Image 1: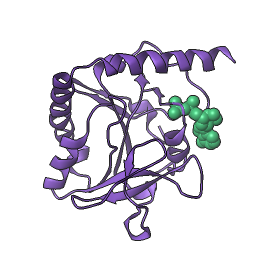
Image 2: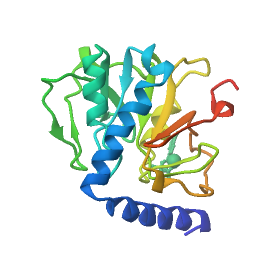
Image 3: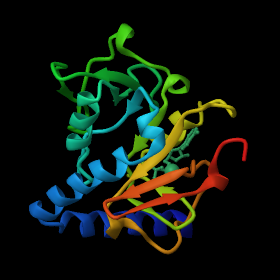
Image 4: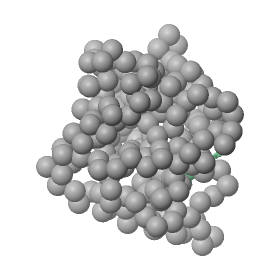
Length: 203
Ligand SMILES: Nc1ncnc2c1ncn2[C@@H]1O[C@H](COP(=O)(O)OP(=O)(O)O)[C@@H](O)[C@H]1O
Ligand SMILES: [Mg+2]
């Protein structure tokens, strides 16, 4: 196995274990702090179509933020494994009464009904989960490459903002990257908002 691949695997294991050690109280506090951070962002205020994810494996819990966005009348979308193009995600509208079904990873997702799908280029913000990030916006995911493939479909002039969400303990000095990794334009942790202007498309 190449050195970089091994290092990425080891980092994933280490950080996933670290975040699983957060107490339920710490998780709850982090989720509440995320609501404050996210609602303070001008681009959230001006956005209508926002993709989020449901937390899995001790990821930063987004549900309080989803509820706050619903309250503000925003349209929220969740990622769904593409039923035909393996390795890609679709974004499907998520409302309070939407039924969810576990996918092959056990992560709940809505049914990909055509009239509820929104193409990535028509989303205003995509909030992504991640395993590790660094101070220049590099993202290490769970290893499936789902977001890399899906975000590669964004047009160079797309207005869609890609923002990573993470616990502070998920920051590392340097993410060992691969050519296909899509860097993030912003990362929000419960106590900080990082901006990486140079990672904007067209920058
Ligand atoms: N745009 C893409 N097209 C095709 N395959 C891709 C693309 N982006 C990522 N992949 C594949 O997905 C796999 C996992 O990617 P990786 O970046 O290691 O995962 P993650 O981003 O989840 O940490 C890799 O084998 C990579 O080749
Ligand atoms: Mg990647």
